Image 1 (cartoon, rainbow, N blue to C red):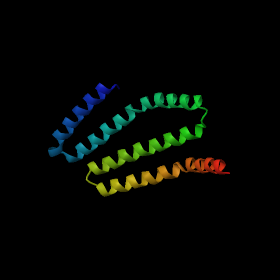
Image 2 (cartoon, helix red, strand yellow):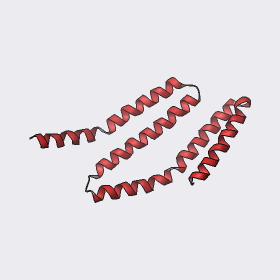
Image 3 (tube, rainbow, N blue to C red):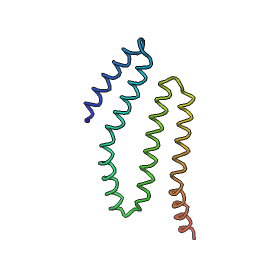
Image 4 (cartoon, rainbow, N blue to C red):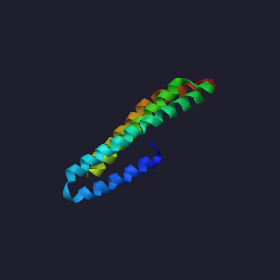
Length: 128
């Protein structure tokens, strides 16, 4: 999907959700989830282009591929947790949404521990 299709679909979805808001709140919630999932899945196609471009940059700079994996894992966690938190907040459960965001932040910290370890090793080698 190109950006114009995404924006047009988004506007049509918002109009449909606003129309259903008064009549059927449950149907509006399901429609919101389905539309959000469609947007998430449609953007996956762009990810392969980004991964290949970043990989070629890292290869040209002779940087370890472990760093790329960590970066993209962290990005994936942040996108998924933001998606879940936003959906929780749309359903009126902002406390649950906040907890999802906190869990995502902790997950990113755990995933990025190898980067911190590598950073400490670099600093140690410079000092010694």
